[in-house]
Image (cartoon, rainbow, N blue to C red; front, side, top):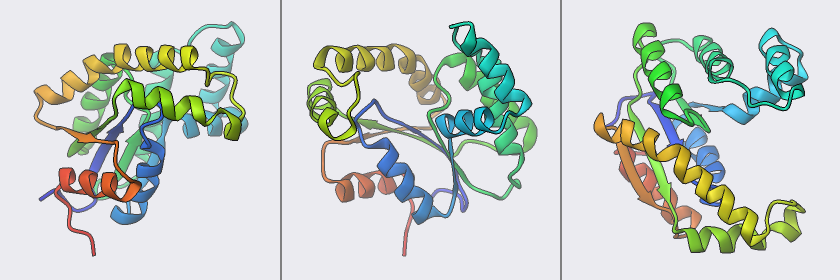
Length: 195
């Protein structure tokens, strides 16, 4: 059985329902949901030192370096006590970030307990994301754009998933069922009893 107040990482390609599962897990497990996207928005909108640094790269039209993203996530984790649980969403995105996270967590007494990867086949992801364009009015929800986002996701995350698989922390969960079914599969993978 997984530790009380677990430290978790949640992976899933665009359209896999990762955001929905993250919200459910936050409530079910009483853990902090740490989304890299939310952290970026927070730092940028509040003009923090990290936000200003990130904006300087964005204004140049270049990707924000890993060390800035890592610092944002570690800053947020440092605000938690050793006994607090958390769920990382959208981080780490590459092997460099995974190594940096592992080193920092080991130093601070935090260890990742489990990494859950919600798997959905690419054809289903393209169907899901291409059909939601009318609702969310996104320009990047054409089947071609969606296929490219999925390909980039696989390219970036495969080494990270391998990193966690080698450490015995990765659980692959099928993500093509109902929200409730996928949620139960995630909880089963975490070996968590909820009441």
